[in-house]
Length: 367
Ligand code: SF4
Image (cartoon, rainbow, N blue to C red; front, side):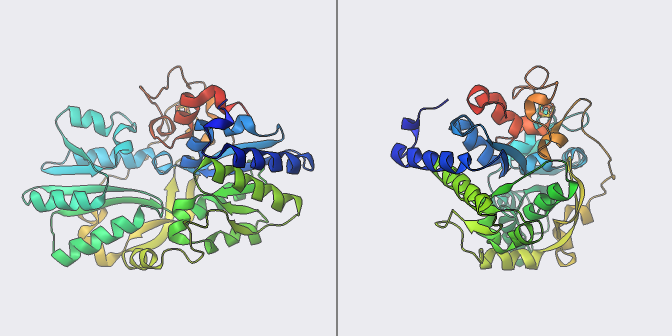
């Protein structure tokens, strides 16, 4: 367990923990889901689980974009990388996610042109610099990355760039949170909502969880003190029998979201049903490229086989993403599946629950 002295403001941390302890004394066991993988990592890195009273349990949720991208998408991305003249550009984590029989890193080792980028605009620049090649960007992520991809597609259209495509798998977070509740497999008392997604979508979309599902929601920053305060706010709502959307991360999230980002997302994407790893098809949970941008949509311009790959045998990534299993419940965890040799995406991604549990194990403490 980390020492409180390692927190940026140990006194503030001490005060928040005291408030949490006081609130917890009035409550039965409560289970709070941290939806976002970055929250999971921060919670583990700072040993927050170990600092909480016994009856305050934290459950990891489906908020790692790489983890929820189905294996079939990885297989299709590999097929794209195998196309002649294609340069496949991706965010780094996707490179190591296993497909059915290969991954993009292995394809690169075999000589395919697979490149890592931090921005879709870099991929567009690659297209400008390689007019004789076909450049495909893997657009994986939540509403956090979707605006940058939308802006890139607007730029591609404006400049008339004809050798650039996006192969997209953008997803919407709130719909996945509702799917977890609808499935009814895990008993939850509140949601710690992701701050970066909320900086784009604002706080209003979470109202359905609070109003229709009576679920307390607090949009919480990633710093350890933010997380402690977010937990405090959630416990306060539970104790008062309230269920509303509260904003802990006021310094970064306007209630109405980022209106510029929302506008360009609306121009480029349309809402569709989408397939999630472990959660199946969730209605209205995907952002598909609109017909008006089909000239830059890899799905319209490349022949992609409809692949139906499930998870590898023994892998519990689906259960981990739904909050009904912890990584160490998976028989493969730490033995056959490690960050060096991952079998499932939850062990690959820096935001994956399995990678966080593996790295910080002890100080995370078992729920
Ligand atoms: Fe999936 Fe590996 Fe985690 Fe098991 S340990 S759930 S195989 S990522």
